[in-house]
Amino acid sequence: MKKHFTLWSLVLLISVFMLAACGNEENGEETSSEEGNQNTTANEEESIKIVAAHNQTSPENPYQEGLLEFKEVAESKSNGSIEVEVHAGTLGTSESELVESLQLGGADVVLVSPGFMSSTGIREIDLFALPYLFESYDHWEEAVDGEVGDEIANIILEESDNKFKLMGYWSAGVRHYYGKEPIHSIDDLKGMTIRTQTSGVVADFWQQVGAVPTDVAWGELYQALQQNVVDSAENAYPYFVQENHHQTDNGKYTSETAHDFTTRFLLINNEKFESYSEEQQNIVLEAAAASVEAERQALYDQEEEFKQTLLDDGAEVNEIDTAPFIDIAVPLQDKVAEEIGVAHLLEQIREQR
Image (cartoon, rainbow, N blue to C red; front, top):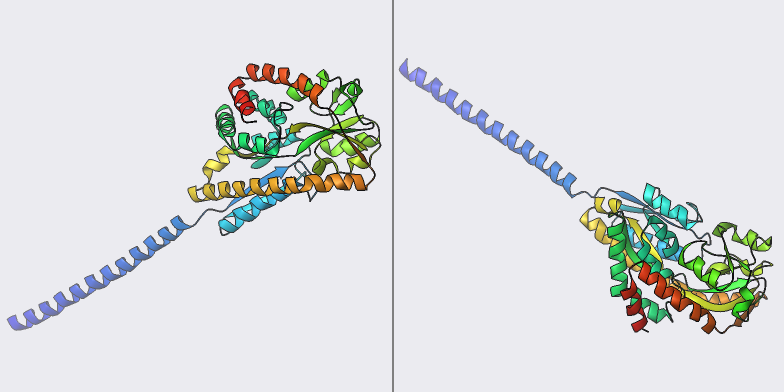
């Protein structure tokens, strides 16, 4: 009887050990599977969509080429975790609309000028709106890509309460006067309405040279020139020629005032930017750098191309002595730079000439 009990006890003990081993193996497999699922989820990049916008409507515009390069690099480098939707004038042909969209979340990346950006209360950026600030593209690049540009970028981030991050400086070309009559001296501008910014340093300059700044949305300017709503406007060749302004009654004469080597800000909503993963942030910044290079090169290539288009279409171009304009601009530069606290940056730009 004792032997019988011992035999059954041994069988029972072996069975218990076998069941325990099977249970541990199953639990081990389940744990491993759960950990694997967790790791897979942790390693997956959450997809993001970036809405990028500018105010130009022409598909050949340098702005469009720049943002398409931004899209190409961001999407290819992210292996699909970043999608970029480019809007060419469809979110507004007024830069003030784009600034508002950036503030309210309707757009994530926008391209705006200093004058419209200063409407947010960041006065220091009016430095780049000063007329006759730069003498050449080389001069402009040295400033915006150096210490001056870095300081302005930091100011934008700080004074916007970390809402706007500057990712790069684009150019919108060298701006010239164009209107219903050529101007041969500064006196020819007296009483002439000109489509330009109607407030800030740009408006002050045109008022001081005798013109009357007039507000017209970019998308409505062709009609305004054609219907004599304004006598003239000012912009760079790639922009106004692509819009056929030179073919209107009040846009056929260009006088090369070269009053502005323009600066444009490529901005991203910083709250959105900070919500991206570190890898996505690096990709966005890499895409921004590529867009800066692409946009500038497109602009430089188009300057002469569209000037020639204008001439081929029968419009006229004349040179003008810019010294009287500069004589008015320099005291304005000094006054504004002192008022907005960037006199040291103005001096640094002048020393880089």
